[in-house]
Length: 242
Image 1 (cartoon, rainbow, N blue to C red):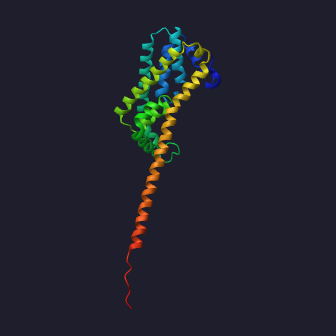
Image 2 (tube, one colour; image 1 turned 30 degrees about the vertical axis):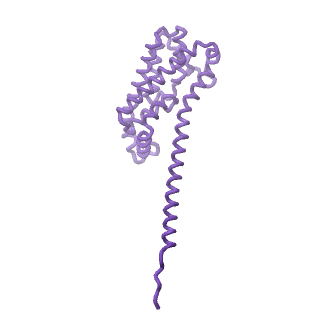
Image 3 (cartoon, one colour; image 1 turned 45 degrees about the vertical axis):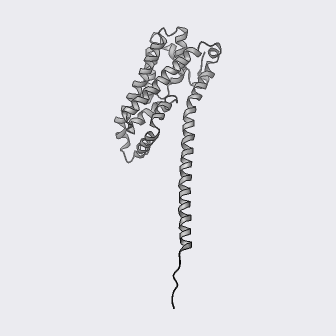
C-alpha cells in the first residue's frame, strides 16, 4: 500500500523508504528515528508513519526481528537522539542567540523558551514526541533554554517509550487487521491527527488560564478603584473660616 497521496513524495512513503533499505531496514530505521529526534536536519522525516509501518512489517515477517527487540532499539535511538539534540542546543544556542543584529535568533526567544519549559517542561517534552517537526526542534530548544538536564532526560525517556515503542506495537497489532491493511493511508493520517490532539488541548487550556488571570487582575483593579472612590466620597472637607 502506497501512502504518498497525503504524506509527501514517493521517497517519504514509509513502505518505499523501508523497502529501499533492503537488508539494512532495521539499522536504517534506527538511524532515521535518531535523526528526527535529535538532528535539526531530520525534521521532515515521517517518524510516526515509519514506526507504525515498522510494526506492520514485523507482524508480516518483513523485519525478521522480535517485536520486543525492535521496540527497545527504537526507544533507545529516540532517547539518544533527544540527548544529542539537547546538547546541540546547549552548545550552539549561545553562539546563535548572542548576536544583537540577528533578526531571527533573538535572546528574548531563549528567555521565553526558559519560561515555557519552567511551566510546561515535562508535558511539553512528552507530548511533543507525537507532533511532527515539533519533536525535532523542541529538543534543541530545551538545550537552548537550559532546561534542567535531569528533568529533561527523565521525561524524554518516558516520551520515547510511549512514542517509539507505543506506535510500533500499535502497528504490529492493528497491522494484522484486514481493514487497516487496506486503508493504511487513512490510518496513518488518523494517527497524525490524534497525536496533535493533546497539544491542541494544552494550547486551549493555556489560553483559558491566561484569560482567567487577566480577568482576575481586572477584577482586582476594579475593586481597588471602587474602594478609592468610596474613600474619596466619605472624606470630610474642612470648613474654611472667613
